[in-house]
Length: 429
Image 1 (tube, one colour):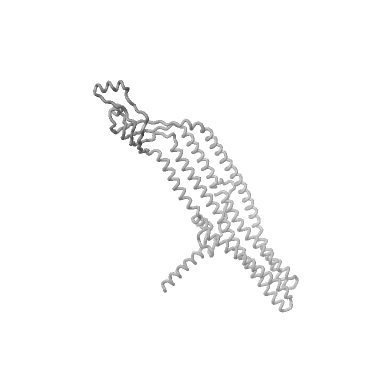
Image 2 (cartoon, rainbow, N blue to C red):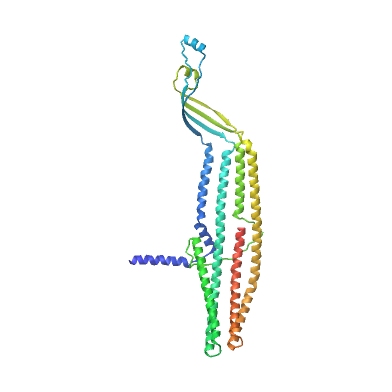
């Protein structure tokens, strides 16, 4: 029993240690990629590529075919009756070929040149596998954006929650002071009630923030496969990204892979109209054999074999080759149009995100001064309120203004970080 309790305590301690550890954005991205179901697609693509390339390579393995047949035909080769009679008089009985014939055969063929078909098939398989891998890359790349949104959302809610807690503490301190003044008949009870309403309202907002933060952490835990409900998320470093940096998005690589598929298919179409050469050998046991004169004398089965070189040229492939090549070239143009559209939209997005970064940096330059001034105004309002020169409404407004300024600064800081990472993600730098 003691041992069981000890093991449970160790397990709980380990879980608490994991939950309390500091977690970075890069760690969350890595965990999400490893946990996302799409990652299993890579192994399947690799196996499929191996099978396809192996099948293309096996075109050079000798092809063996076994067959057996028994036939009956309406007529068979024979000597004219005059010649048969002369041979019979000389003691040679030649009856002619029988109408029933039998063959058990083994055919062997070795390609010498297939017009480039096997090479084209191999290139198509490799290009298709690369396109499939890049499609998986795009899915995982989009996953990183989801992780970023959740991560920065949690950081923003953490900051806003802390500020709301500070605001509630400040309001409660002022409510306590107002209550003392009301007890001394300096203020009306309605003034105390007005402050209490603000405390309760702020408390509701705080609970809503905490609920949203828990929901965000639950989603982040689900995507990463780690329990991050109590983990401390570290603030990422600000990124410096230039608009002149060349984009390295997986979508651009996918367009290149699609173009490679079409190029390989062009080679396959051209190879279909090329002549193919192969060595062949055929051996069979049956009747008739190669010696027709001997088979005319008797119906004995015999072993036979032939070897040679064979050429196969499918002239019919030329009928559709031009149209098929034109279709593939149109496909290349469509891929280029899609690439240009993506590059255009990507440039527009980069420009917009960079403009947001500039705006947020300028806003942050004034935030410290605004907060300092709002704090000074709030402290002065508290003094005036104690002296009875302003009402409770003006005091609450000063407290709200200071809290709003602090929230704006937090929002600007997190949004700036988020935008820099979005820009980096847009460029894939």
